Amino acid sequence: MKCSNHPETEASAICMHCGVALCAGCADKTPTRRTVCSPGCAQAVAETEATLAAIRRKTLGGHRLTGYFCCGTAVVLGFIALLAAFGRQWDLFALQLPLAVGAGVSGFFFLRLAGRNETG
Image 1 (cartoon, rainbow, N blue to C red):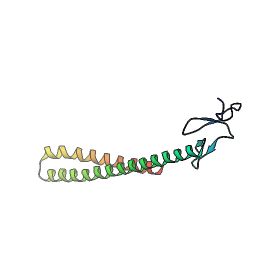
Image 2 (cartoon, rainbow, N blue to C red):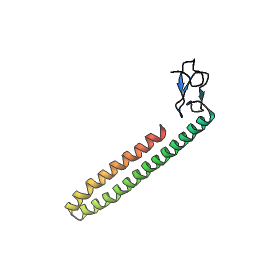
Image 3 (cartoon, rainbow, N blue to C red):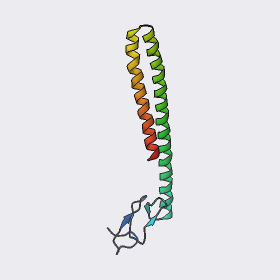
Image 4 (tube, helix red, strand yellow):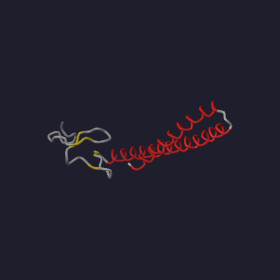
């Protein structure tokens, strides 16, 4: 493939935004080390990266909120199971305890997922 600006030169890179073939002399790098062909493409790549970072933050916040909600639900269901056990209502206890454990495990995994994705 040949450079779009220099038809006699082999391309060594492709613009991250528009896909234009570039030789080593035409290729520019953004601060995040993305290859671009022009300042306009560099701006577009920066806007895309900012949008993706915002989506990532919102997703992590959603995972964290879901984790806390599941843990809170587990506490409530566990308390109901405990009251059922003291009242010798074994059918209610048998229903509530697995629900409490499931909600607690789900909450743990959502919080772990949010923590893992936050660091890397």
